[in-house]
Amino acid sequence: MAMSYQSISAGSFNFSKSQSLTSLIVVNKNGNFYMYAMTLLADSSYLNGDYTKLQRNTYRSKDKNFSGKVFYHRMDGSFVNGWSFQNGMVNGIVTLAAPNVAASHAGQSAKAPVSDVAEVVNCSTTTTTIYWEQCSYYTNDVNDAHPISCFDYTTSSSYTTCSEVGSGGGTSAPNPCTVSSGSGGTSDSLVNNAKFGARVADPNPPGGSAPPGGIVDQTNQIGTKNCTTPATPADTTTFKILICGGLTPTEKANIQNTINAFKVLNCAAKFLANNFKNLSFSFCIDSVSQNGGGSINYNPVNNSFIFTTDYAATPTYVDLIEHEFFHLYQNTTYPGGTAAYAKSTAPGASNPAGFVNIEFEEAIFLDIATKSHTVFDSGTQAQITAYSNWINSLTDNGTIYPDLTPGTQAYTTFIAQYNSFLSQYNDLPNNPNSSPIINLTPQAFIDIFQIVTPNC
Amino acid sequence: MLICFALSKCSAQTRLMPGILKGKHDTFVVEKLKLADSLIVVYSKGNKYVNGLPRPKVPHFLPMGRFDVHVDNNAIKQLIYSALKTKLADLKKNKESIITNFDFYPNGQISDISFGLHENTLVTLQDIEDIDQKLRVTVKATFTGKAYLQYEAIYYSQSPTIVF
Image (cartoon, each protein chain N blue to C red):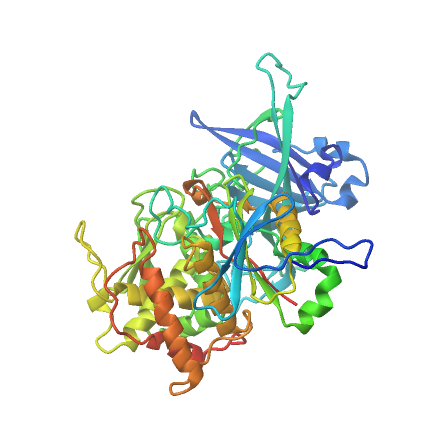
């Protein structure tokens, strides 16, 4: 495995001239063992053509001239934490970039924090490509010297590096605890063949209680000796957030990051976040099953959102929040609200009449807001294409939101097409949202796009 | 079917009409769409999920997270533009576009591709076969997270529409 800022085909990548070195780190914490991959991604200025320099850097100490980044991943490929180095010293924190954050450089101000980093920081986002070579060996090839066959492929991830600027003009090592372990990252392919020796790491290395560039894993509480629960920044411009107790610092940080990502996801999301700014919502994780996907449930009685898995409560699934907030908007649009169409919690109960109307309207809204075509993902090729064509025509190929004025020919045509697609959607095999259709004009959809534009 | 008499390097170009059309290496289905003005969909007869993808093994409330599917849309667009480079001006004059849709196996390989075109498109069967073949070889998806392992095949919700 190697990491690189290049993006070329996997087969063309020269592993011997990679700027990266990956080591297996085994942490012995009170007799329990934890394994991590530590990847050094050195700057060209440090290597200066000498790729052997990478070997001078270990978990416990870095070459005094080392400049570059260090990434820590779990064995399932999920990102733990990372550091940026300059001349052998830590000068920045690496985290997973929030969705839709393009490679860039940006400054944050203390008055408008995006996450729980309250200090003045400089941040930049870069995309790295991970080159994998997966080889098979005979069992008696103990040195893995003769691969039978190899398969090259790549994965990529975006990381945000933030460097803290100290008041004295120089840089100081940032607080390692302002790191969200996050999730996602590389694919879950294991590193089949660890060609590098394992090093046993001390979670509390000598020289200080804060690990200089070490593992900070809040899930397993490694390297977190001096960490406190990250403070949630007060945000008075949109709805008030209450995160439930009983969650780990990582889970709380993930929820906060997901909400932050929702607020800037797209113009429709910004509108929804502002529209409910006078309300308070609580967010929690109630892990029923940890199957890697998950969903979110909204309880209108107490304005609470419950994620069903840890992974659902990460920015990767930010669309879940926009999905539920549009349901909130529907609830305020239709006389009497949408409670009458709500799914029954009784086991085996079928969906009430109108349930599919509400879900279809939301699905169309989300597709337009996120520039996706998901509604007919289990439909026929013909349905998928016809639906894509319809959405393209409503949005002029993703450049506008549909502005539908009642009484116009465009409005009449839209309603006819909407009802036809609604009927087809309802008839999709094994559709969990199917129900008797009622005569309900998609007023929430029409209203929101008469207010919001793609330019915000 | 157009037959060229005069040009020495002319090859037969088959217009996309509803029905089953045999290309040089593959057979394609052309369907006229209802509720889509003057639109056809074209796909290889070898497509596995013509009648719809199966639902995931463990029911999920929403489709797989779109941020967990990674496909190079620019590569798709460039490939199609390149394949049709001799016709770009005419396609633009005709105000044509191509809607693409992809399904991927969890290993990243393409399982199904379909193309939505105007029924009077200048794109021919030979063009589609060429594009289809090149896309299947060139385009791969990568996935993050674990949800993709729940799917027999993954629908790519952000397939590009190529506008000429």
